[in-house]
Image (tube, rainbow, N blue to C red; front, side, top):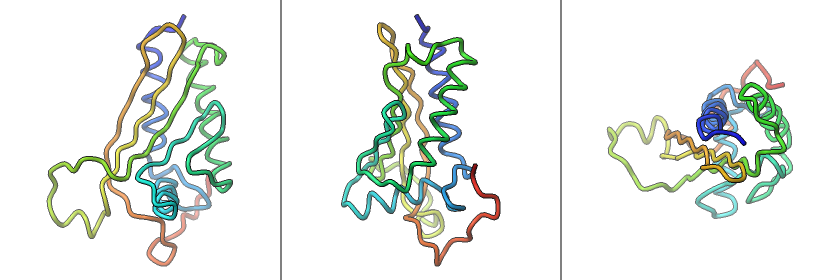
Length: 153
């Protein structure tokens, strides 16, 4: 049975990678694209299930993101000496309407709105590994953004 620290390590690796600006989809930051998806559906949050390759709200555009993070989940589980079959849940949730936290007023026009990323990794009979990241983003807008020349694999 996996220990809680190992599940937390997996959650931390997934969270740090997902929050990274290197997490791109077609050369644009995935979190900005997910923010746009949430806005289009009038939802405050987007949820991705890495084990089931499903998301709410659904968009087939994010299939490459699922593939990349499923491979990362498998790699992190292997490094942590946990069989993938032991993991019962691997959930990524982006809340684009979190309770506000104090910030300097110029952040909003420059960086966008606040969001909270939560990654939860579970295994039967063990406490969940949970990791959170808070940041700022705005909905994807190709007119305002530069497309990365380094395309994600």
